[in-house]
Length: 410
Image 1 (cartoon, rainbow, N blue to C red):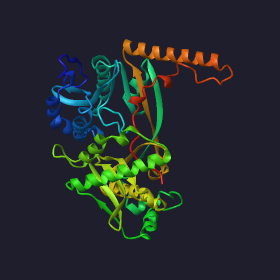
Image 2 (image 1 turned 120 degrees about the vertical axis):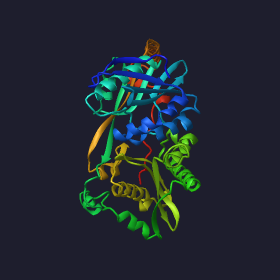
Image 3 (image 1 turned 30 degrees about the vertical axis):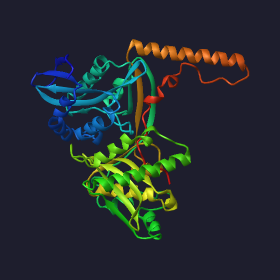
Image 4 (image 1 turned 135 degrees about the vertical axis):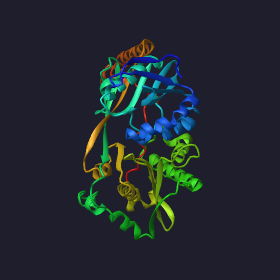
């Protein structure tokens, strides 16, 4: 635990003090589980805010890569009321502060008790992150524009870039029966729900299976198959993300479904044709929001749209379990279809947080300006490049987050 702690008057009726600590020790981090689990349930946290997710991310991704743990916690009268798990990443001479996780495209938000003091707690967490984590840059992917955190980050003086992303989510609870809900949807590529499965059934016997989390070896084999499908698609369309070739991320997804250390946080839904997998999707448990995490399908059956069948079965699974379903960021047609065109905006933001970071930014801009001038001297008739010094030019490509793992387009 950070040896220095911050105290400030609390607005809580008990007039207690509000205290912020930074947890950097693994044993102290693990000891938070009972309180963390209770707060997650009270605050209706997303799966990526759960102790299970963060512990698995630390053990299987962050720690093996040599990154530092910086978990900010807030207590009032001794009770845990806020937690924000972060990690530090060294890039040459500079330190980046980023959310704890596998960089798989999850949102960034603070798990916090929801009451009159919520805004003050988040402000305290942000100040703690800026002042006490030793970061030269702070990189936060996919911060919803409705959050206090978004307001705090975007008003900083040295924002390197702020990039908007479309985000979709399907509100499923309280929609009557499944048929009632489907009648509100219209068509997806001219097809009603169930049509794609009927088309695939002409090729053989179609079945849908929700894997038992305890079937660890079979689950791992199907996840490996999904990654291979995803890589084939990526090679075909010329798109590649770092996480796609990460054995740590692949292992992490399997542990989300089953781990002896923590409760399961996800399920694997598999679509089979004559008992062979043709599509699969991993979805988190809801609280009440579930999240579609990762999917893949066999391109051989692409004309039958098995990926869209898997998505439909994922939505139905969430519906049957009384969850809402978040699709993450992206503009894929199936996301707007199942969410009935309800969309929001999430921002990826990076700021300079130290004088050392500011010097790096200015040096990089200066080098680009010199290179651009030299280019104009050699090729005076060449069209002008984008203005040197624009925010987009100072991004660290190694810190750009992967987009939420998603079904490849059919």
